[in-house]
Length: 267
Image (cartoon, rainbow, N blue to C red; front, side, top):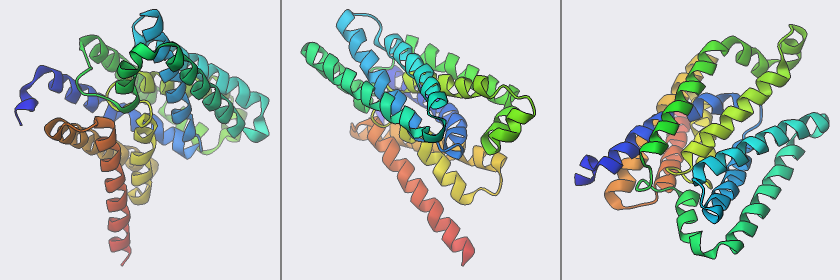
């Protein structure tokens, strides 16, 4: 347990706490609007940006963030072009992100070991700059959710009514997508690009089993997410496991526990 006293692990715990709070806040809106896969899409595009960052020797997280932002704009553009087949936009961008990442991996064989830490997460790589970026994104996400809570609630449950009432639907759709790109880009160092979307989805799925209202669902999702992230980081640090894997597996265990609690209550 000496690892708990190490500065790098304390940075990982603080960063994980912030990620565990902001991911389900956005994940609730994504899941309820049936956009769960957008997190996976932006994560794959982001890892292509990380690979390019290593290739041109520019801070990989920033390049990954730029790629994720461009992908978020493209998703919204395609969603408007294919209104009746909105899932097409996600499939197209996901395919392009995987293809581009594969291409960049073959061009930079020397950095593949470094990129692996971004694919599966690592508690050893989070430095002070990363922590400040996580803190900044968390502050922005919290501010947006608190300021526009009513607008996002209306948009989530009745987009047509939101449009009729004069709400700028396009702006808020783009806002949520852009914030998702930010959250994913700053989270991949701890959770990993292949698993970060699970942090947006699984805690929300568990909260939906137990919650009796929207606000209660948001609070439960954050609590479940924090238990999974902090618990997963401690387990990965003590037993030298991949943090993304332990966090996601712990999330799934909590989801199963939620089903068990729900079943017991119904009995």
